[in-house]
Length: 157
Image 1: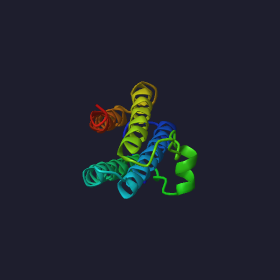
Image 2: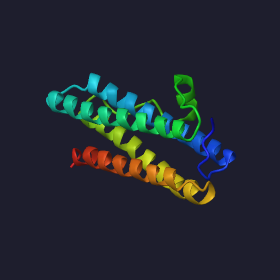
Image 3: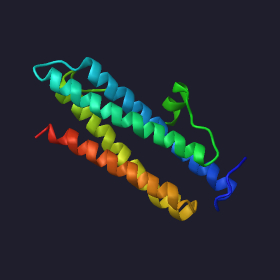
Image 4: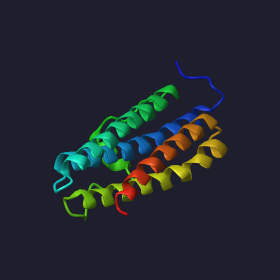
């Protein structure tokens, strides 16, 4: 049964497509953060190992929330790696060294890219698609990424 929540079916479809792109970004960022957790080396290994673990756990919760928002809107959340690669705005590549600073710089760049992308979507969801709920949801995600970026940025001082 399709939701009857004051948003046209076409707009619900557009919101869900955009959210699947957000989900793809979250998944790629999660995988990169997990990789940092697994592969960080150096004198600060243990602290950064735990730090990256905390970040990927938060990203796991974000991914779940995005997927559930898509389901609330009556659509299916993407769950294929090939779709994530096609939909993401991020790259899987890292041009940084395999140490804590390198991983932090790469992840910070990705969080900032996600923040910009989310910020651009807020008015689109609210004004063009008449979905204040998703605009609010995306605002909350943006704020979580801003905090995570701040945590990463603070390690570079």
